[in-house]
Image 1 (cartoon, helix red, strand yellow):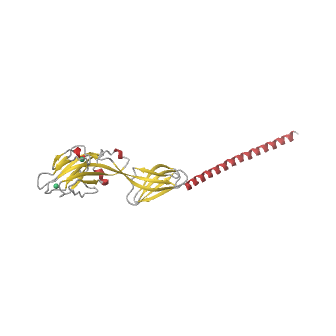
Image 2 (cartoon, protein in one colour):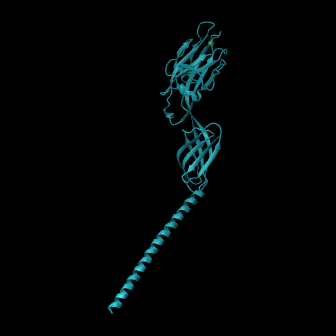
Image 3 (cartoon, protein in one colour):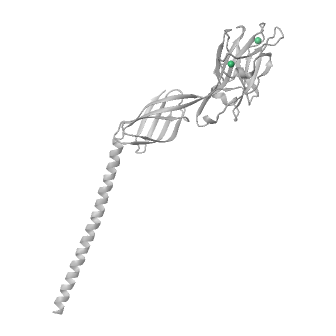
Length: 300
Ligand SMILES: [Ca+2]
Ligand SMILES: [Ca+2]
C-alpha cells in the first residue's frame, strides 16, 4: 500500500513539473513572438512613414539687406583745393537743400581737388549676416563737365587711398546738374574697413586741367550690403516633417548646414538664413529629413 501511494505521488510530481515546463515554455514563446511581431510592426510603421513623407524645395532666393547710411562724423580734410561754403553736416542728408562747397586749387593750369572724411560703420547688427559688400553713395554737382570725379577709400594695409577691387574704377562724368554716383567695394571691402568699422572715403578729381571747378556735395554716405537666402519648403505628404540638414552644392563646393525646421502636412514654409549666401552660377540645394528622405532643388 505504501509503495503504491509512493508511486502515485512520484507520477503526480512528474506530471506537475511537466505542466510547469510546458506553461513556462509557452510564456517564453509568447513573449518572443509578441516582441518579434511588435518589432516588425514598428519597423513597418517607420518604413511606411518614410515612404509617405513627401517634402519638396519649391524655391531658393537671394535676399539683400541694406544697413542705414553711415555719414561723415567730422569736417572733411581738404587735401587739394579749398573749402568754400557749408559744413560736413550739410553732406549727411540727401536732397535737403543744404550742401558743402569746395573749389579746385588756385595754381593754374593745375586745378586739383581732393577731400576725405572718416566714416564709422556699425557692423554689429550684420555679424550673423553674410556681408557681400560696402557701398559708397555720392550726390554732387560740378560746375563744369570737363573731367571725371572719383570715389576712393583708404586701404589700411597698403596705407593709401585706392579704388582697387571696386566694382567700377572708371570715375563719373558730371552733367553740371545734381548727379548721383555710387560704387561698391565688392568682396574687397575688408581691405577698406577696419575691425571697429572705421573707414575713410575720398572724393577727388581726375587730374590737372585748365578749368577751375567748384563742387557742391549734397550727400556722401556708406552702407553695408548683406545677403542671405530664403528657402521655400513644401510638405506634400500626410505627415509632419522634420528637416535636419541642408546642403548647398556647386561644382567646386559642398557646404552642409544644420537646420531644425518643422513643416506640417500641406504647409508651404519660407525659411530665411542670413548666414547662407548662394553661390553664383549653377547650384543645388538639398534638404534631409529626420526620416532620411531628401529633397533637391536646382537653381542658378
Ligand atoms: Ca582738376
Ligand atoms: Ca545735403
